[in-house]
Figure 1 (spheres, rainbow, N blue to C red):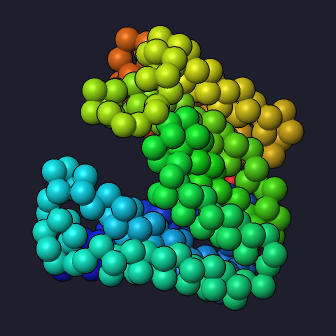
Figure 2 (cartoon, rainbow, N blue to C red):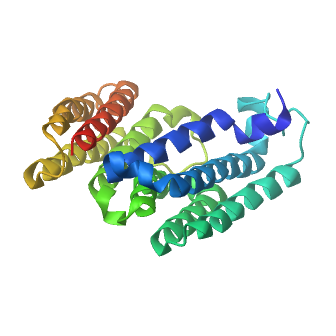
Length: 272
């Protein structure tokens, strides 16, 4: 594989672009066609951000990847740590520069904050367990804020951003419970408070998502198709229960719940 493709992992970048474009549609509905320039700018910003984050991650995890991912550019000898680090930093900075083309304060602010969080996570928060979990979850939620900010109002996707953030924290904790044996050197939540207590915390976050999902129903924000969210809520509640016995199944179920939730918001926006 080409060393740059291996470093940037473009498939992940494209998935991120699809995610932010969906977020734009959720905020503007069919009116998204009136914002083609903004869509193009935001798509490029997200692509650069994810590519830069992947490159920075590989430069920092070079030693770990000698065992975990020996095929990647750095451990395979195709690229130096310095080159990967420079590319990562360069792409992240470029994502901020491109965001200036939106001429929207909130869009630019979201990208700047996301860059700071990504730098912080890769440099030192990754090893600090719960704080790292929250950082990743916040970055997930910010995708939806960026999409709505690019369309008109950053608050249009506030509920879905909060839901994504809360459920993502639950998933990250569940994955830490699952990976306890291989997480030596990391101060994860399960290591600090035990698997049982960590499962309780994960369950709380899984249930918090469905609680928030009721708000658009009460406010009538979306069409009746939004009620498909009941399926997502059921999956989140199930994940909250199963995480105590099977954290892997819990986080996988929550992932399907997030997909179902995303579909619910899309369906609700189609007919608004």
